[in-house]
Length: 443
Ligand code: 9WN
Image: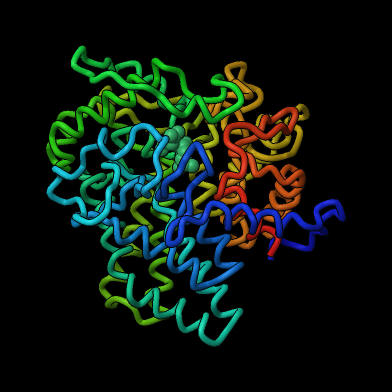
C-alpha cells in the first residue's frame, strides 16, 4: 500500500510508538482523542482512530465504531462528542444540555452537533484489514458491516435531508466545530455576524491549559461565538427544523460535502459486496454520491480553481483560499486541482518543511503558522488526500504524501498539527488520530 517508498532507518519503531499512543489513550471501549486536551471520543477522530486500530486489532477497531454508534441520535445524526467519564474538557455535557433533546440517546452523554462523515472510509479499511487477517477477524468485520449498514445509511440520509433541505448537494453546518476545522479563516466572515448575547452564561476555558502556548488555540473572542451558537441550539433543544431558523451560523461546507459524496460511494460498495441493505439503499447511496459531488463541483471559483463554501445567511461565496478548496480532489480525480495541489501555491511552495498541504496557502500573507486551522499542517488532512489519491489510482500522489508525512512524523511526538515551515509539532502531543494514520501509512 502507499507506493514503493522506503521508510528511513531512523523511523524503525515509529509504528510501535504509534501503537503505544493508542493503547495509552484507550479508555476501554472508546479512545480519547488526546490524553489531556480531549479526554472524550470525537466523531471524525474515532473513524480515523479505527483506521489505525484496524492494523492492530480488528475487534478493537469494531468496538470503537460500535461505541460511537451507541451515541447515534434517533434522527440519524452522529454527535461530534461522546463523553467519557473523564473531565477537564470544556464545554462538557452540562453545558451542552442535550438530555432535553427528543432525539438524543438516553444512556450516553453527547454534544448536540456533528462532524464530517468519514466513517464509511473507516468501515472499508476495517473490512480490508479483516480480510487480510482472515478467519475470525474477517467474520467479525463483515458481520459488523451487515449489523451497522442501516445505521450508517441513516447518518448519511440525515445529512442529505436535515442538512441539505434544498437538495443542492451541499451539507450545511451550524457551527465551525461541525466542519472539524474550527477556526479556519473560511469561517471568519460568517462568524463576524455571530454576536454573543448578553445572556451568554459565563464560562472558563480549559483547552489553553493543555497546549504549550495559547496562541496555538482559538482566541477568547472566538470561544464566545462558539459558546453562543451552542446556547442558540440548546434553547431549541437541538430540534433540526427549529435550529435552522435560529442559529446564527449557517454555511454550506464543501469539504464535508465532498466527504459525504465519497463516503456514500464507499458505503454503497460495501452494501453491494456484503449484501447489506436493499438494492434501493445502494442506489440511494449512489445518488447521494453523485448529488454531493455535483454540489461540490458547482462551487469551484473560475479564477482560483478552488471550491468555495457558501454562507447561507448572507448568500455570499466564501472566497478564502484554504485546503478545503481541494474538496473536488477529495471526491474524484481532477487534473486542474491536482496541478494546483502540487504547485508552488500549495505543497510545492519552497519554504515548506515538507511537501504537505498546509491549512492555508503559504503564498497567503494571512497564514498564521502556529495557529490551529489557520496555517499548520494536519496529518489527518494529508492522510485523507493520500487515501483519496490511492482510491483514484494515483499511486504516485499517495506515495508522495505518505513519504513526506512519515518524515514529518518521524520524531514520534504525534502532534495534533505541525508548523508548516519548521516542522515543529504543535497543539496536543500524542494525539490519537495522528498516531492512527501513522499506523496506516506504515502498514
Ligand atoms: C472541538 C478532537 C477535535 C477534532 C477537531 C479539532 C478539535 C475541538 C476543540 O479537536 O476540535 O470539536 O475543542 O478544539 O478542531 O477537528 O475533531 O481532536
